[in-house]
Image (tube, rainbow, N blue to C red):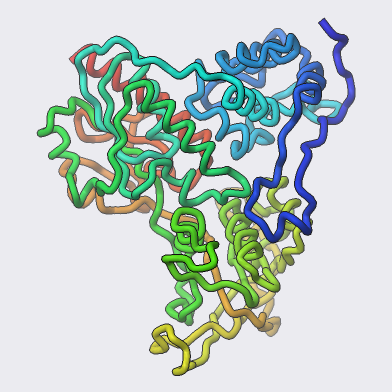
Length: 472
């Protein structure tokens, strides 16, 4: 075994040059090579108490897979991860390891933690490039389960149930499986081929994916039971965008981040002659400070925007996006207008424009400067307006990225399914809803959250469904 690497810093992640990548949709992070991965793995101390595992929502056996990397057994490392995670190549790219497993890493006390996410990505990519072994179908146990939604919670629940021998059908409303992984996360952060590979692995395990089926409209939850399914998992996400309720939100050129990213990611609006319209070029303001806001801003830049602003009402310290995404956005030239809040979207009429002019078109966004006051109920300092500090940003497009809510369609067509005041499905600790045989998890329960937390909810629900049907 090679000598431990006591360097206090992670091995840097190679990336495309900022000025080059800002105008293409190729993946920004290029990944470790074999030698760099081994060198980073040698930073792991293989702690006796393994605190990093407790920081992972799906409890991947982190020191074990890293030990395999040290030995050069990359396929062995992948198989260890695959025991716990259905989507390792996805998680290695988009999981916020810095606030989960890496936050617990002992090496982080006197330096940087081990690059666990970077190593997970390396292992998954190595497997996908070198291994032709596909998952096998488990012996059938005679039970049928329906999964609503093919996002991270649904795919994880389906995968764990398939491993236990269940006949699983996943119903997806869109024409492509993957949920938020394909419509919400841009190609430059998560290539669609990676998601397809993970979905294909589930198909090899016997999971059937049916697209273009809207549960609550095409079929109801009750009709799924009539079709012979003995349990249903709802992982339909939180796809209903929130707006600010300010004047001008109906103007042409105002998008929710969900719509903007879906048009670009899933409907390929970045092509020269796209089938779906999207505004390209000009100046763009993105309102919000989360990961979705960063994705929208960086997408706008790649679609040809000459200037992109992030407008956020708190300071950089409170910005909720991952630090890596913020740094990448800054490197690419996106301008952060912090401690600012929009109060009106300004517009004008242009009857010569080919689009419907009845609502007018965006000409700017009027903002007011803010200062941080006393903490709110969540402990964050509340932004307070500074009277007389209003100013206008000259922009052609405004993208609103201030959060999403669960779609009310499933609740409105399902008797006995209770939700909370903002539409999240009410569940117990094991994901059971108030309707017998129906379980839920992910953003449909919590509102917009992380991919890995949704996967954790899918795992918990799969275990509970197995116990429910075995004891029924």
